[in-house]
Length: 163
Image (tube, rainbow, N blue to C red; front, side, top):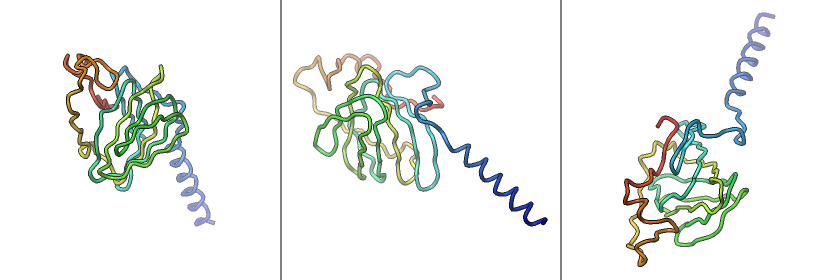
């Protein structure tokens, strides 16, 4: 009977721990204002990091040298660049981004893109290498946004929950 009581206690403890890891992404919002991109960490271990990413304007083209990123669009619409191709994305779309594959996105909806991003292996932010774009012919425009926004202090790329 004693062992049965211990087993029941362990199972109840495990069940309550599992509930802590359960979240509804629809209910998660950034805790404070952000300028362009806000990353909300959801989970991380040695194998995977999981984030909710909110994108008001755009994410510049970049690569992750050693990480695979899997993205699912939860809300909003955008124009994505992936490995030399552009295409439209919307809620429900699922995109796999292999290591060393250039990617970026411009939000096209009035509300921010809300993206679930899984990175494997664990992601610490130091494997994001931005790609320098050649000067646009029209100096006043760059990726649909005024270039002066970048020249006047720039738009922060990624603002984490602890920023």
